[in-house]
Amino acid sequence: KVEIRAASKTYQVFIGSGLRHQIGSQLKSILSQPPSSIFIISDTNVAPKYLDDVKASFDKELSVFDYVIKSGEASKSFQVYEDVLTKALESNLDRKSVVIALGGGVVGDLAGFVAATYMRGIRFVQVPTTLLAHDSSVGGKVAINHPLGKNMIGSFHQPEVVFYDTETLYSLPKREWRSGFAEVIKHGFIRNRRFLEELERDWTSFENIPIEQLNTMLEKSISVKADVVAEDEKELGVRAHLNLGHTLGHALEAELGYGVMTHGEAVAIGILYAMRLSEEINQIDLNIPHYEEWFRRLGYETRIPASLKGEKLLKTMSQDKKVEAGTIRMVLLEKIGQATVTNIPPDIILALIEERME
Ligand code: NAD
Ligand code: ZN
Image (cartoon, rainbow, N blue to C red; front, side, top):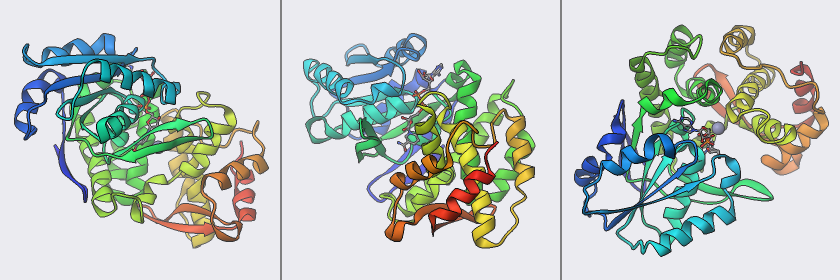
């Protein structure tokens, strides 16, 4: 397990196989106030596989309600948010009720925002079921999307506890493994060189991964996130390093149309781009071809699709993170395992976008 020491709250992330069967019994000792009722939020892919197991882990006397949203990013909407709240009110959830997010980052972000706002905030528990959610379920950022921008309406609301049942990851499509693994790689690049080297050694495909290897990797990756969140819960400083690869990554997702590339696939291209920018700005050599080869072996694209226009990407990137005098705020590397934030003039951004096109 990993301990998260955020300024507002300390809680545990349990990592292991089959944890979903123990949630009800574990919560009895973890929650200082027993829950009056439980409200499980899940999605249409996850619920048929795992919802009954989680429900069965609670005592018969406790009322356990559930709400299943349609899978996919589109569910992080005002409409679905309202639908979930309606069900919560109809179920008479009160201040002592506990929300459980059973699913990937979409369920976690939505359910977390429901918990943050229902009756001005009730407790919630994260039960992540995707690899990407090792990142999203920890740290307390919860949100829904506005038509004008992703994650624009949200809050900081830390969970009481995270139960990461890694057995559930084996029903994920390979593409979702690849998507989530980009955030793992990111954690190595920004903060832990040795971890990155272990990843390179042990992870050359996503086939037949032993669960011990998966658990060890997740524990280390979550520890990086835990350190960052402990230093800077509200993203006033070092937490911004977690955005490595994301300024270009978000622009790629938006320009290609959501769903064409997964989030992690876009971030992987963004990380390599940020490395090239780091070389230029910081006058260093990061041996990019070496990492490109590893990324390719894992099935990532490493170049910006030629179908996109550099100027348009630049525009989208500056909407994402614009600062004074038209420069763009980017997370760069000082070396492998150490990140920094720098304001970059747009002409350099554009020149290197063009260099990194396929
Ligand atoms: P997701 O929740 O949509 O899950 C991906 C797909 O896998 C979905 O189709 C889902 O139904 C399916 N799925 C989930 N678990 C499964 C399982 N065990 N077996 C089979 N299928 C399963 O997406 P995601 O990649 O987990 O998360 C992406 C979201 O996370 C985005 O909305 C992003 O904004 C958010 N996010 C939040 C933070 C944060 O700090 N809050 C950080 C990163 C990302
Ligand atoms: Zn991300």
